[in-house]
Length: 628
Ligand SMILES: C[S@@+](CC[C@H](N)C(=O)[O-])C[C@H]1O[C@@H](n2cnc3c(N)ncnc32)[C@H](O)[C@@H]1O
Image 1 (cartoon, protein in one colour):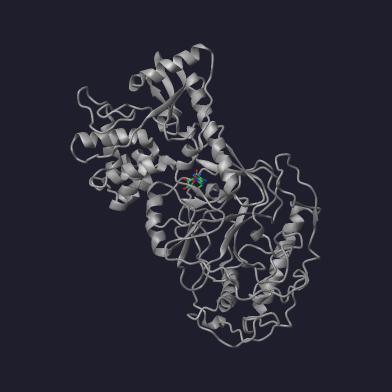
Image 2 (image 1 turned 90 degrees about the vertical axis):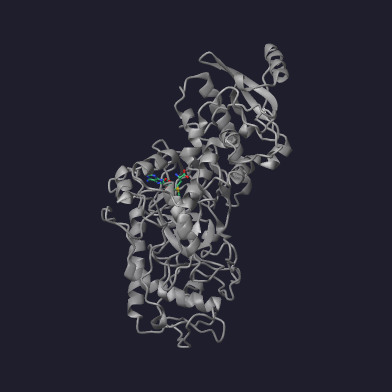
């Protein structure tokens, strides 16, 4: 019924929460309490603390909630002035807020005559005020706190109040009916109407040639520069991040915290002390005994650190217990992102996206997908909320036989991969990688280039695709489930053994696999290190270029993988574990026969409820129409 109608209504992706709610009302659908709360919170964030506070004041006025806060909104300085359609607007620096949160206020809303006349004198002298943040303001990051506070104040009514209900309070305050809490200028009983913030929808309709728009742009660009600096301050990858918005007045996203590695969610501990590593002098020549072989998989890289295996192959890199140094060819993902990227505003409504500022050769590691590792149950809960706002950041670690207890949520905590959009014809592909955490349920998610990628090209991967593919055209990009299952069972067994998980079935049925013919990848290797083609990058000195053609490389990867695959096919009667000289003595492995026979799902973000479909804007010829 209603849910189907919502599909039919096709609420556009990134659509306004209010539109979404209107659509729901029309279809007589109600949000759950959790979703309603979440949307209310998002609405407050979206309108910003000033408008939010004004809306809340209406509830105070009606006696529905109390406001006993003695917090002030105080004008610290007036920075600039514009006249727009006969009205005066002033750019306000708020006390205790960094310049990123300056806002334009109509003159009528200001009651700081002294500052106004001081500004006029200043302006008459032809001077311009510089926006310099003081350290205190920068340290406080007060914006989120303000909105959180407001949300908290709404507690008594928030389950009965909808975002639409809240916004409907925003009709002009009638004279004489003033709210009773302190207004934005710090005076009790003197509320001030405020303009929406730069990111508010109304702003996007401004005439881009107007002075007002241009001023706004300056503000937004400054906020984005600040954000870029902030991101690069935290980013631990060798290559930097550039931020660019040539499209609209959207500033830095709220509710996003940059991280470099997985963050453990509540109740989760991510072990990172492997009990075993390899002893190789030269891992590349010792593929029979190196980590991947111990884990029943294939050495994943050529000497120059580009992929030599196809999608679906589990990757085991050398870890902190291994003897080899950082230059080992089996240390790739752990070295971090080496290509400089740009977070940019897309022009077709897909929000932010990521493009590369350097040419990337096929098979190169590009970026890791990091976020908060959460339980399956928590993922179900968050998934519904993401679905309700047409966003998704959940990535199931659904990669092994048996249960799938973990999901990565990059919605709040994430790195640049948080901004990578979906394409039905992507240039990145996903691999599961184990390094210092050998728990088979906790691989790291690495995105590698599927083909050569030009400088300036948007980076994309295929979000698909568990579950419903009714609307999906067949894709060339599907994983070979059979092959994947086999490899994963093997890798699962070894990882479990290495992580010494007592809960897993074990067998001491290990036999050395000396007769294995480890593939010599040097034959297929065509890498030679040369300089990059980009002028933007200063950080990367380790980018490679093939002398051979991409097609050749691709063919080699395919045949290499086919060979590995065939080897595994012929090994099915053998025990899975390879007890090598490097394995700890007495180590035992789980016989694959005993492994749960669940077909692994793909390692891709999921839409938990499948209730809302997002229309895909990837523009690919083989586009499947919907993201999910
Ligand atoms: C992981 S985020 C990607 C970053 C996002 N564009 C942003 O601004 O934060 C996923 C969301 O981006 C949007 N998106 C990504 N790829 C898209 C596509 N091909 N078509 C339409 N929307 C897309 C959808 O809203 C989706 O839920």
